[in-house]
Image (tube, rainbow, N blue to C red; front, side):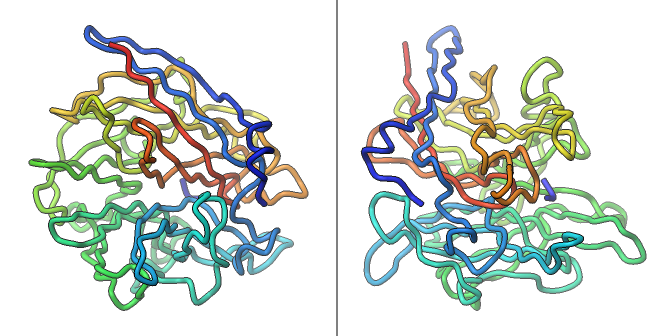
Length: 362
């Protein structure tokens, strides 16, 4: 896509059951429920959480800070350079740390929080939509991001899915760029974006794409997280009769369930005439085979999160850079088995938080 917090008592009152779905296979079924953890965005410039106008679509990281491992978010940030007409500057990536154990409060996002931004002509329009994994074998963070270029002598943009690595993500100088994951074809730019890496024993996988050139999400294999081999075909298709009919786009890196399989959240869109861009973005899920993640065992028939709250829809006085959008790129495993917390962008303007619980029925 180119494009304060509440007390614990209040949280109980605002818990929203977003979707329940049981999808069966021959051996098992999975029930997936998602719940908002706050009725308000957890990071928004309107509550003075950030120096940037728009803060959204963040990756999750667990990082060392002050001798402790803490939750952190790598957030896509943009400033409005003009309000009438609305003009926005390039996307930059800023790192912020959780201040308490509730996951609801993060440090102020300032210009000094920026750890990654445009460098060179292939990124002159910005660095967008990060997804990060940590590989213990190399003690390294691997970030997939969209390097966006305004094509010369053209109003068109080109996105290239690109890779950067770091052993200390809080230090801007520690990030090493490895360039586009997929090279240009015969000297012609090739569109790609939105990549989530699945780290596991043996062959690892990159799940990527936003349905621009292909009607679905694609997949590639890797052994070292640096070099990738495209696997032919479409991994997850759009579906004409479902909530993901207009597009599907990769979500955060898949996380493992207690049965050995993987939960993969993905982004989607369907036609929505009342939205300025004609689309509504929702979040769906799939269960990937633990032995062969190229196989999809189950997939949601309804979204687990849709833009419903005013700040997700972009209803004034809330910000609404892209109305009617919820979009996820960062997720972590909780202490309780098969329970996860995810951080999502809303209306391409703010960050929200939700929990997802998977019940496995054999």
